[in-house]
Image 1 (cartoon, rainbow, N blue to C red):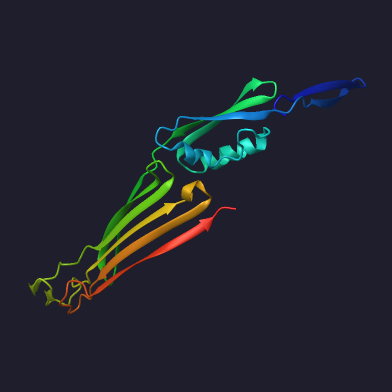
Image 2 (cartoon, one colour):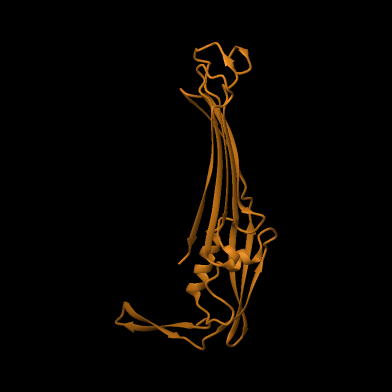
Length: 222
């Protein structure tokens, strides 16, 4: 009941008190005519519309409108989301959602140390709203920083078995997630990793272990 009214009725009680009664007039029910979205310069409109809980032709529901606002804001693609209700006629309204986009890409760098590989370092990138389609792409790379620091008679023939004779190591990972496959509430994703490891002590190859693999995942929103 978008046009409802609340009328307070005051009734004096004695000399120092009063009763307050609220009269609620629901008036006519209204329907949603159109839903307008503005402010999305990068994000595709369907990424926003698929989070809506209210649709054109529905009876207007303030709860469904606020649930839609919450779900769009929780995407974390926007600094702010402003819903507005625009009266059109006695029994119709339009809904306008104005979004304010923000930068969503992230970069990270890390450094550590362990006994097997010595100092390690790396970094990665994550794109939560990849191509404005709500997809997530992430890439990361790690490397043993001490690899190749040994003094040796050849490129891969270590003579020094001291603390600097660390194992060679590097790792690469990429993953991709599509949260709404073909605009249906089905999530699909996949990841791939590649790792190379060396033994360090007396190892005559640059890398003696190579591993690669991946994973696939599927989920559905209920």
